[in-house]
Image (cartoon, rainbow, N blue to C red; front, top):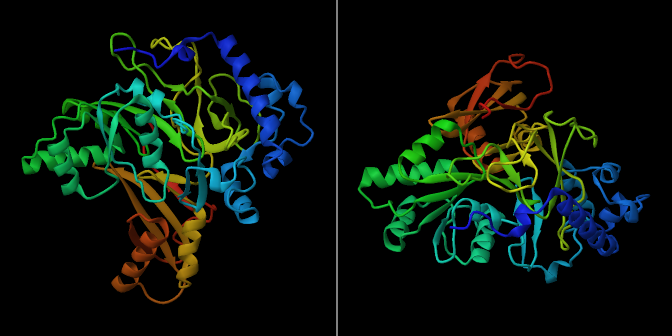
Length: 418
């Protein structure tokens, strides 16, 4: 089984840098005439001089948190897409809402390398349990699987019994989805005596994979690898293994991207090894995001990877630079918590607390009572609103006025890191 997807993964860092910046200048030279927001970002930038990391650091950062505003001002993609909507393959929606394009090119999201590193090969069958409903997740992984030559069961999320039927009948070798849902499938299969043993490898994303959950899944016979992906940038980085099939430290940055680690709130690169915000430049002719600040925190790892790939390595996800949290694969924004308050004027301060129990993400909304009395009926109404706004279930705890600290924090992510 070939360890690497192609020779690009093992080229010298110098060759990679030359190719990346040559391609970046070519893409921007065309795209800036078609994408007004990109053109504004490049105002005053000499494209001919944009040939290395130091020059790139002089370009203003575009923040993910700006996308909702930009897309309201210039529909549908905020003036950042260089391809007209009718020429794209799919028009998708992420929570926020943020609208995302998908182009026609093979492996448009860059998922094939991550899938290959996780063991997917031509002729395999993939159970893809990322959502296909409006959101990019299912399409990200399906496009990569098809690029490799694997068949895909477009399972989506939920419907556990039907998923078990599909596993028993179609015998998928490979799973894509959140690690939480893989555990649910394996647990349900064991409880009901269903045969789910065909799944031997998995690429997971969208939720935490703590060592305890990885160990449990691997004890059930599934080799699990994880990818770091976003709806805006596709697959940014992914785990790899060395020649002895041992997990390599950190995650390998994907080819076709330039990744910087910057000080949150600035565009200034941090010192090597310091934790900072992930900023991605995506070399994609349809949606060429330039110095796109994801809001995710990580750090670069020193030295070459034992897997033999030569690109930059990062430590994986180390938290958020802002208060947005990813819960069960879905982003929850402070603006959504504020919307709950607007719908329930009897409430005062709100704080959404994200925790983890029994290998599952959990949400609890603490809400101060501004006026009126707490009741079970009110709690249930707010729980319904919470689910309607965030598309996720969570508990509601009503507290007295003044019980929450006046510190401006709206979302508190209390899940352990690592």
